Each structure stands twice: as C-alpha cells, then as structure tokens.
Length: 418
Image (cartoon, rainbow, N blue to C red):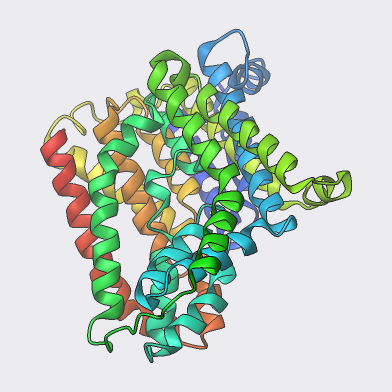
C-alpha cells in the first residue's frame, strides 16, 4: 500500500490536475503528471515502474494497443502539419471553393474539409474563406463565427483517423468503425442543424456559372490534393472491416496513417527540410504525450482497483449509467477545452464501473465532444470569435440550441441502439 489510501490519493491527484488545467499547462504534461502523482501517493514503490512500463508493455495486448495509439497519434499530427507545410490544404480548400458555387454549401463544406486536419485552433485556417463567402449572404459577424466553428466540427465524429476517436475506441475496448456507425445519424443532425441555424432568414444564394474547362481542372486539383487523406481513410476503414482483432489492437489507424503520410510525401515531392520542419515544434509531441498519459492514468487507476472504490450499484440502473456517461465526460471536456482530456480522464474513471460497448463508447465520445465544442476554453471557439471580432456570448445564441438538438439526437440514437 502507498503513502495514502486510494480514494484520498485520487482526490489529491485530481486537485493537481485542476491546478494544471487552470494554469493552462500542456495536456500531455498534465495527464502524465497527474498519473505519476497518483501513483506516488497510492502505489508501493515497486509498483510505480511496473505501472509505467506496463502501460506500453509489448508482450501484453493492452501494451500493444497503447503503443499503436501513441504512434498513430504522432502520425496523424505529423500528417496534419505536413498538409500545411506543403500547401496541400490551401490547394484543397481553393479547389473545393471553385467547384461549389453555392455560398451556403461552401460555408458548410469548407470548414469541414479543413477539419480533416485535427490541429488545435484549426478553425482559424478556414475563417478567412468563411468570411469571404459569408459576405455574399450578408451574414453578421456572430453568425459567421458560428458557421465557421460548427461546420468545422461536423466531420470529427465520423473521421476514422481522429486521434480522439482512436483513443476512445482504445480506452473502451471497442473499435473505431463500430463507434462511427452509431454516430453517422448524429452527424447528419449536426449538419442539418448547422445549415438551418446558420442560414435561416438569409437571402437566397445566387449560383454562379462556371467554365467547364476550369471546373475540370478544379476537380483534378481537388482529387490530387485530397488523395492522401482519402487513401488514409480507405485503408483505415478497410483494415478495420477485415479484422476485428486487428482493429482492437489499433493497427488499422496506425498503418493507415503512415500510408497516408507516404502518399503525401510522394505526391508533394517533399524535401527533407519540409518533412523535418514540424518535428522541430512542440505541438506534435504534446498531443503524443497526452495519448500516452491517458493510458498511464488508466493503468494506474486500474492498479488501484478503482471499480471497488465506488458503490457497486452506481451504474446498474439506466439513469445512473446515462449520468455517468454524459455528465462526467462533458464537464471534463468543457473544463479542459479538449475532447481528448474529457475522454482520457472520463474513461479512466469509468473503467470498471461501466461495461463498455460500442453504444456506451459512442455516448461517452459524443458527450465529451459536444462539451468541448461549446467550451469557452476551446481554442477554435476563441480564435474564431477573435477573428470575426465578436464576443463569445453572442455566438452562444446560435451554439446552445445546436448543442441541445445534437445532444438530444445523441441520446435518442443511444436509447435506440443500446
């Protein structure tokens, strides 16, 4: 037994977590420090190195899964950065904007396409494009901010190489594909709500004529610039569909990510200098460290036997289960401004209390994701409001109804498929 009983140790370590979050310390550092503080308080000295090594022990299935997810997270972040460094993201968004002449459709699609790059504050990349198209509809600044924020975040719940989806599947013992299938109806609702709230009462969009020759060139440009992402998605889905066991080890996302990187390197004729540039920054390593920290925290909590620290009947009734799977991840993601934080901490706490299935994993994910989307600590939200020079409070009049309708759809899908 460690220096402190398990329950007080958990409370103390999560107080440390709260302080680090308040100080805006990198999530990767925060999760690892929290896990190590908890281990040092509640575990015997000999158990600490065992917990650290056991998290990524290649001789165990959990260890192999953690290794796969950590390296897949690194690969996804590198792919995102290299898409920017090579200018492929600019070519992709420009060609899509030229192909689609309806401003409303462009405003819905462009931020979502740029959302394929899961980088912090990425909505700032689509904001100038949204600003230009939204002027054609005479949208107010607060509505422009809403459209940019909401449209960007419609893609992630069904994006198979989203590091948060990969992490959710890994921590809940499910597969990415099984979660995605349950979230397709929710994404359809998100898109419909975003279109209705964002463009309700605006003037009818004028469709611009296009030159067939230019359209053909734009189509080729779009296919070329989108192909690394498309290949990554196709490989991830194909591998996940072929073998459930393969997918549960995280190998589908890992292999697909590096295949996509290879395609991008070849098509862009990337120089070594371009490839190395993102590796000099800290952003990639922070997110990768967060992926490891999530597994380390779960491993420490499992070693403590967290399931025995709570009343056994807490998750037995449907109401209690709903509260556990919705409030905990949503509040945590709201406070951290990160869906990864909400999932990592929430899933670690709920492990042993909840028998995870694709339905419960999806509810956990969507609760954290929606809590993060509307959080004022969410970087995309902050950057978007700053870009359009509108107070965050004014964006909430569009965001809150969208959140309520989407959350209701999430609960409905869960109740129908549970």
